[in-house]
Length: 188
Image (tube, rainbow, N blue to C red; front, side):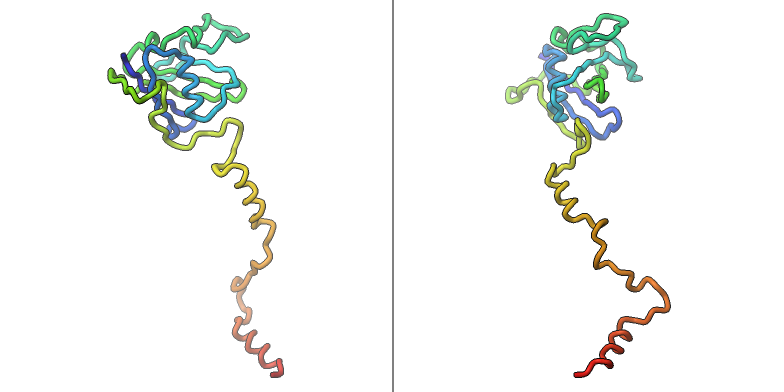
């Protein structure tokens, strides 16, 4: 049985990617869920794959379901299509689009074909994670909500007390001279 390794790049940043291994007999729907899991996205939105060429042009669509929109050609359905049936060459490419409102676009490239199945791996599986993936619903720090609390607590833009302009001007007396003149005025 052939094991296919796909590299799934974030369209905007090819330094952020996930490698997913999957059996050639598994469906595009299984690849769809594996991609979402590897990027920590939920599965609440519409999704589709496009067969692609080396120039990343969109070809035949392989959709999660048939959506209410115009199609040039009826889409294939992910659940019904085995990945192996759509592999045309050794560096086959697909474009994966998730959430048609936010337009998350991933470039999917076949990078390896192996005949050796690992009995310890439950396919599909993420075999490599490179870079910090985007947050599905906006920016959220790596530390989560607690980081926002820390930012508010230690916001230096608001609290400028204690920060002076010492040593910034010319012609000012030195601190030793000022200190010395104060000493002479006090009685001991």
